[in-house]
Length: 518
Figure 1: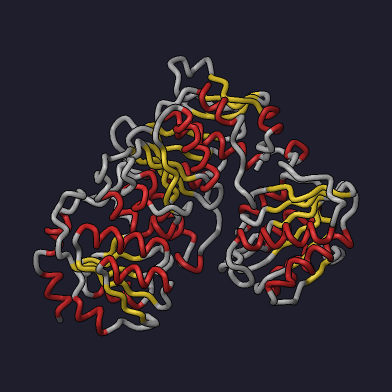
Figure 2: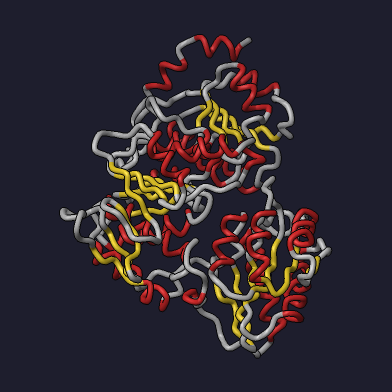
């Protein structure tokens, strides 16, 4: 009954006024769901603001738990398979949920039933963005390519003399960037669909970004959202209230529809990007030249040259999906006033992160590529298209996504397939259905220490000169590895242990030989 009474009282009015670091947050009762990196940043921020904070976590990190006690937050360790009595007694005025908790989690359903407002960390960060001085926000989402696009955009901004911070789902909580004492001019925020799910599009918690992009949309996280429609609706929130530019993928109609449906500020423009010839107000490629036809006066008849595919190829950046990311990031940076010359020069020094189409070794004419970051079929498809004949190491947690279409589309380029991970059965069935003659190997070991050595040994036995052995799992990693980076590192270790001194060296993958398009 207590929670119902608070919902009927003045709590909503108070929350409406909490739109500044300097607002009165003292004594606000806040429940924080989760104690990962995000949950801890939320609790740390709120206790600094003077709120009364109760953190709920099923199995908290011991170091973070100790620090909570020091900063003055309380921790309730609970399996959270039901609503804890302590939460009901606490009578929270607002609940801040970490992004990993499903919408049908018992605590979130309880909050909905008792009219307790639910925020995400992104809404909280927007409300307190003025601690040092309020930076402009640029938002990036999409099924794939988010992190690379965020890093590219932040690099372009920094090269232009702006203090820019890549943050959000990239690994640095937005709240940490907001509270950085040096302050920033621009935050380039990677947003997952989980974070967007809780983000309001109107009212005091709604973000008004300088520019935003949804890079692409494909089946992913359907086990979390429940349907592709719900997943798309969450992604589409990224464009709401944009001030300057809504950047969309011309090859992905879903992103165009998101822009058409978004409520934006007057003057905001729709800017398309793609690998084809750009129209006015677009970014694209003309005879191997990446062009801006959006941010110039005479965009009807002329274009600005950003760089060339040949130059990108020298840097290992010419895979079609990487070129798309560069075009999207260029559009976002241009919306913030960065000259094309600055973007060109920054690309000369940019390098992809580890485990993103990274060449591990070249030996005996066989190239070993780590794209462990390809954690869903859409990302794996982009990776497969960048190479010729492939020995494909695939598998893991499919997250409710059907990989049948991916297998069917690419069996023609495969020398062999090596299936790893927990969800092997569906993949094995797809290969047998679409390519019954294809050499198919199944790594049945569940021991983290042996999965990659076995997969690499099998690949080495079937790969031929001119082939690429490609780790592009099309699946999440947490069934057998700590994360995609751990999976990639173990692939590196297994390849180098198997090759010994045979490797010719490593470096960027030569992407110019793959199929055009993405």
